[in-house]
Length: 121
Image (cartoon, rainbow, N blue to C red):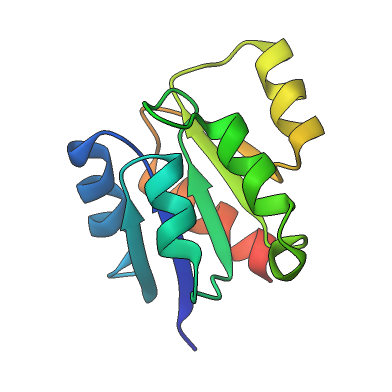
């Protein structure tokens, strides 16, 4: 069974790395370059999980999480934050906004696959 993931990151390199890590593991990966783009891509998509960066132009990860959680059909969709940030107050803010988990970059591809498998399981 293939799981659908939406990955939102302003870095093309990071989006490519996420895709290269998840596609061989059987994930159907959709990409967006910031929070605004992420909301547009999410429209009509029913992802099993969402991955988002925090620091992005136009709409950051916190705004994106808020926007996703405000949509009835995505209230329970797992959201993993994938970021270079590691400050406890930012993690707490993300949790308060509705994030399911937090992974610090650079990430271990196997840990990302395992985290997604756990939150979608």
